Length: 74
Image 1 (cartoon, one colour):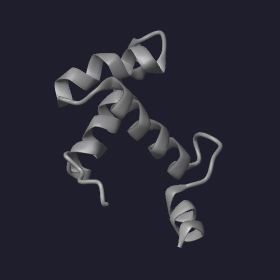
Image 2 (image 1 turned 60 degrees about the vertical axis):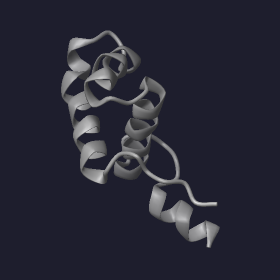
Image 3 (image 1 turned 120 degrees about the horizontal axis):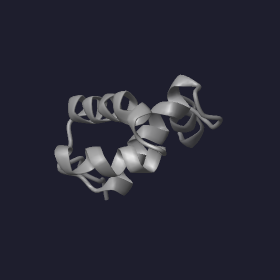
């Protein structure tokens, strides 16, 4: 069963960018995420996962980038 994505890649990118821009104005990543999520119309946990995925993919956070994870799974 495939999972349908409710949010387009553009919306996800915009949401992550908003969190990154707002991060300096908040004491933690989570508080920035909680502030932005309602503006996008998604759950804070969902937005937090998008931000973490972006950080993995760009090397900001240690972890396996999405492209490598997909390659390993196939």
